[in-house]
Amino acid sequence: MTVVRRWLPLIAMALAAPAMAQTTQGPANRPLSAIDWLSRSVEEPAVSPEPVPRPRLPEAPVAQGAGTPQITVTPLDAATPQAIGTLPQALTGLPPTLWTASDTTTLTTLIQAVGEPGLPALHDLLLTLLLAQAEAPAGGGHALLLARIDKLLDLGNLNEALALTRAADPTDPDVFRRWFDIALLTGTEDAPCDVMRSAPGLAPTFPARIFCLARGGDWMAAALTLNTHRALGDMSEEDDALLSRFLDADLVDPDAPLPPPERLSPLIFRMREAIGEGMSTGPLPLAFASADLRDTVGEKARLDAAERLALHGALSAQDLAQVMSRVTPAASGGVWDRVDAFQKLNAAVNAADPDAVAQTLPAAWDAMRTIRAEVAFASLYAAPLARLDLTGEAATIATTLGLLSDDYAGVADRTPSLDPLLRAVATGRFAAIAPQTAMEEAIVAGFTQKVPPEVFADLLAEDKLGETLLRVLPVFDAGVAGDARSVTDALLVLRRAGLDDTARRATLQLLLLDRTT
Image (cartoon, rainbow, N blue to C red; front, side):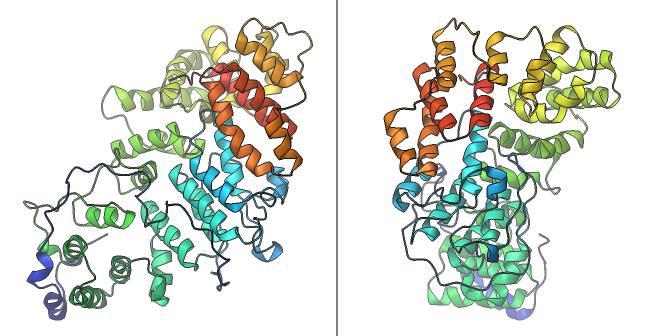
């Protein structure tokens, strides 16, 4: 944001000397909490009655970029008030009663507790659960919605979280607060600021109100609002000092920067950036990395952010490719070597040159494995590589990419030399498989046995499908860590739930990707 350097005399009076006071108390190096970064959003939601319906904004809810199936939105008037989501049943295959038989408190607790899945297929399943259009338990729709949004934010999936806020009611105060924070991190704050200016009661905090007034060019009103709340004593010294500098660049002293914030929020992050005291997103919670994807950020920071988000499954393959394709390697080592390897392979693939691909594919594959973007890489290059006549190491990598792609079954059928277990998982044909290790035995049992563990069978019999899937995710993760029996149990549950494709993808990834560390 451009900080205006000269204001009307009235603004100068409002930003008088008391505004320059700043707190020096509190631990300057207090670690930032991954729970506490939002505007009191990522906290345990209270189970409360459904909010009074509010008028919805006119624009259609949309999202750009995702690592999951393309987000679409069913018109809200075609769904029940509690069936809020961005992925319709036709896309997910999940029933509208996904949540209805479970207790809201149980569901919100499970959503809060579930960690980031270790395999991309399981990560996609979690995102699908959070985004699915399905009815909530009676009286628990609001709490469940907030828990879903907050988990998306915690995972760094801001586009998906944004879509879910808009598919709900963005003018609900709880939902609006989350929308505002997402917008601050993605550089789209004009839309919620416009709403806030027309409905000041929606402002989650006084600083948010002041920020939006200034963002809209009403610097006089912003300064008067700051002065009023300062006089009333409801503005902290920390907020006062930051807002004063934000509104008047003459108060910015590069030799006396503000101390680290007592508690970080997206608003504080953006205002500190505006006064020239920006904070590195590296040590901040994952969602802040999205702020470094903006065009106003330097290339190195943008690349680092893209790699960090890709590492956690929070950046689509297309967005990763766009970031890595639009820069010129400025040095050697680290991210620059990975960019160089990616660009060289991309040029070779576009030229359909098998020799050039053979020379560049190994380095590009190693680069993608470093940032755990193998599945994203496969979605970009498995198909074009399959059309080339490759041999040796390049052919082996191309086959691996094919097994990590949507066409895993076709690749298995077209590769006579494929490992028998990989072929069995990809095609679903296990009749001739002779497992050699405990993990192989566990995988075969997961695809050939029929009955899942009793506790999961009981949940499924009670139509608690969503709860079952939330509970089975950490079970599969235990299998990724080496517990073979957990792999069997998780596969049996997924298959009983009708998620055979997810079971097969996850198993192929377990066998092909190194997720032990």
